[in-house]
Image (cartoon, rainbow, N blue to C red):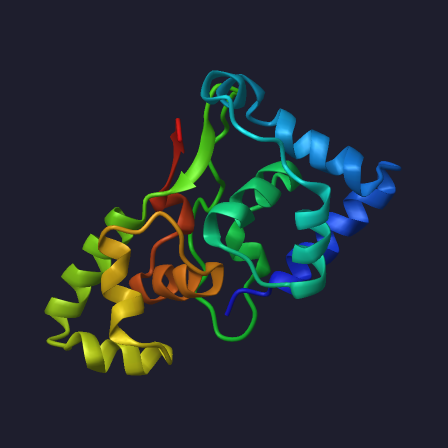
Length: 170
């Protein structure tokens, strides 16, 4: 299971260590993809949304990538409970002209292939993950998903999250 609270604690500890307020951290997160944001006329990271994420502890997989990138940490470092030890979990290093994004259709395809090899229905697989079948099948066209679910799926596949995370221009 992905521990969003631990990610938030690491983020807050690093922020405090650097003497940054929440607005300063939001600016640093914005700056990670500054050239892409300028090209897209994209909005900045909102410090209020950042604080709400800290209070909530859960987040989308795309939002988590931004935090992980700033911390220079792999998602697998924030797994709790039973977990597979995997090689090379480092996220790609990128410039400010792109941002890291989960390729959820790629994750869906890998999950679907393994589901078929194990001769599981979507309903049976969803029961293993404690979710609805549509949460899994929607990954085929999704841009957002819960970070906990994406990480449980990569663990089930026996693959690092980095296999499904790529530089993107959206």
